[in-house]
Image (cartoon, rainbow over all chains, first blue to last red; front, side):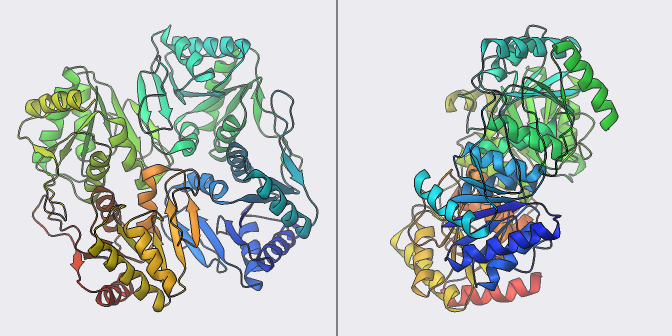
Length: 157
Length: 157
Length: 157
Length: 157
């Protein structure tokens, strides 16, 4: 499976630890990581995945690899700026959001458009204008988050 | 000014009336409309703007003009699918969101990333993971909404 | 009709005159210009179109309007870099290429993929790997070029 | 290194054999393949790279993996249609073009814009409007083609 992990380029130490644990967990189960390839949550999740020899795909916004973190094994240089935020949800079978702000929100929105499962860890809760609740599943633990990704992606396909 | 209007491809009669009034109001003041160019809120806001002879730009997702509404005067055929949702906030000086679901949410997210003012009419309210409130200004009335766009865009530039 | 005009950001004085004449000609016939919105050929064709009060659409690569020429009336800020070169051929009913280098070549390639007529004025000639000649129509004169656009776009639709 | 291989979705048996040999050669040297991930030349080069256990990245144009060939190990689902042709040259350190038509031409154009070396095998020759020859290096043999990619990419960085 390809698991997308999204979150801020700046992150708190706690978010960094969560991202690292998520990366470790998904790689130890043989999944491929897809993320934005830069700093903060993206760097920590790549670092965690590499500690288990995982494949780490970084979907970069710029015109070259200069802003890539050192734990990306497959850098994709899109050159399309923030529009690359649409590619991560398309590419992933399920996503984990760790913290984050508006960039993460845009990726959650595209995941929901594409019908991809999203697990949140200290990230967005969303109530639609019509009062419905967006189908985001909150988890506290990396192992439970990847369990949920596996279960929900199987149901979505 | 270029004013972006975003909202669902399906909309309620009340949302359609709101969109029509917003289109009328912005065109009567000489602003250019930029929107997604399709049905629902997009069609009604274009229809309103055309009733005042406004310029209506439709940023279309597909490979041709087949899904364009009949009130678009400047169709832009992007061929990039939902990634076109990033272009509307970049192009507009300020945005008005009328209702909407996840597509509208993605456009609001990109507007907030780009620092563009967003006025909401029966649309999303957003609380960030850290508890802060996103800077969305709720309005009930088309005239007040365009007033706010003009005032906020002047402050943003 | 929407007529795309493509060509280099640097251009010779002769290419600039050609671009100006093409802009004048298409606007005088009521067509809308779509181009990349920047300098060189793009600036001169916009200037020509504005001399006849034409509508000039500029599909900009960057994140804001800072690199737009002063004759663009409808700036579209894509934020997707050179990938915006795919939007101009999709949006235009027919294209005129004036000089140009690799950016212009990419736009001609996308026009040919999309089956859009391309008229060349001192621009690329292309022979395919299998020895066939690409369907590019060479013209020396702005009036003949727009005649060809009108005739070929009618046949293509 | 990441080596891009581009070419038609339909290809002759001879082009298929060339693509297979190029895939085998680059993977045997430990390079990662990046391509469009679909049929024809793309399928054969992936098949060749997989025969040497290579990593094969497919940059897909559609909204899901349905058009991916079975030899892609890292599918990137862009959802941006033909605009994905801009991502392959950005991502690769050097490119090999095998045959091809206008899609391949657009990728060569973007490679030349980005200053990436392009080796051709029975593919496009290009003469610029000003009479200059585009810097494309023709090769007949897979081993020589990958040698040239390695040498030219080292010079370009």
